[in-house]
Length: 514
DNA sequence: CATTGCGGGTTAT
DNA sequence: ATAACCCGCAATG
Image 1 (cartoon, rainbow, N blue to C red):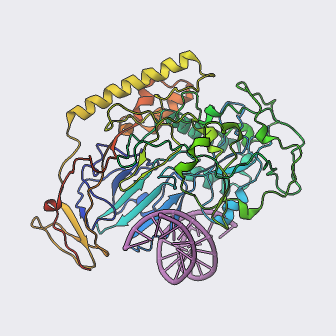
Image 2 (cartoon, rainbow, N blue to C red; image 1 turned 30 degrees about the vertical axis):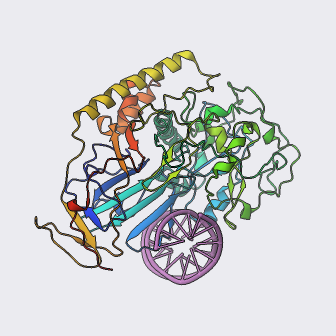
């Protein structure tokens, strides 16, 4: 699935912006759910790579560089009430890529027939407070992919699922699709639930930050009804499953959203039950709210960087934290993170960095004693948020954690995750050859190579197939080995100054053609 | 109609 | 200069 230490290609070191890119002779299999700071190299004829596709909802972003396609993550569509579907799962739909279509998605009724909530965007802020970005760069013989940031939200439904529903018109009535979705979502749920805070980075210059982003706009008095005009169904006060930590994908209690049969079929709605209801979140009192507060212009837009100045309010404002509504028109966030309700509000140390910057994230990250090592699963942080956690479940998860850690250590001890490839030097519009007769590609805007980050990923997806997961999940029992198989483990040493350099200019035949 | 990519533009750092 | 984003356009399916 995502990034890997043992990636065929990422054994080399390169940055998408480099003028010199290693010549890659081994390629990665396409990673639909690439996450974290990672670099992959695909065959030039890889159809998915050629389409620049991703499971994440990525929209094109103009970086004014015709040679590198940049995309940024749109997050995920979730229910404004964070409702729990009858089977205990959550809603996580795929945001439309085009702004217009996405606006229309926002405010639509929650697909959960028993829920009065509305769909809203949970923005991605996994890259220093900004959306995760993907970069694509084509050469004659390879397609280079680089991702920056760690998605701090659930996976949306896969593109294929979204497309299938659209092509089926009122897809919510299709039972077969529902099953498909449920399976896929369930799989994603489980994978996400095992994801650990991925960043173990420390900004040495500024020190550890509490990066839990607070509401940008205090919002106690901004209760609203997101019902579309003429469709308001707010005369009903739902009992809300608003135990916020349930939406922390890194909490052992977290369960990924899932689309239900009841959503997709015409079957009568069964009585909704909220087995883990604890408190009613007054934020979602829709009783006396006009129906016209959901202005299209207020819906969806800019992903504001999170200012560390705000963090002080994060913990105490949990229950009042408004939802995130990004304004497509103005680029402002009108209502801030309900995402805080998804994730932990107990962030002690947030470490989020990329190759060039330190930054913020909504992740609740556990600080590893060793800054250079972090297990990328979801099992560590049982921090003040497990009131609803069954002890047995905790035990299970920690069992997985331990086995995963064991594997990780074993793997890293092998120490063969890195090889030194030939390098593919890319300068502008000319072809060069190194002494090994490697073909070099043309590239504009050569830049000085900046070996300023070091990261390694282990993707265990190669050890367990998707179908294995599915079948395991179908049995309603995820055993540890299966879970373990698709975990991402990664080491991120994001300390720029402290990172050992993998190479120097001596390793490159840098050619600059300004 | 949505997706995708392109590119001119703005704003902020 | 760089990065993030807005917006319109065109090609495509």
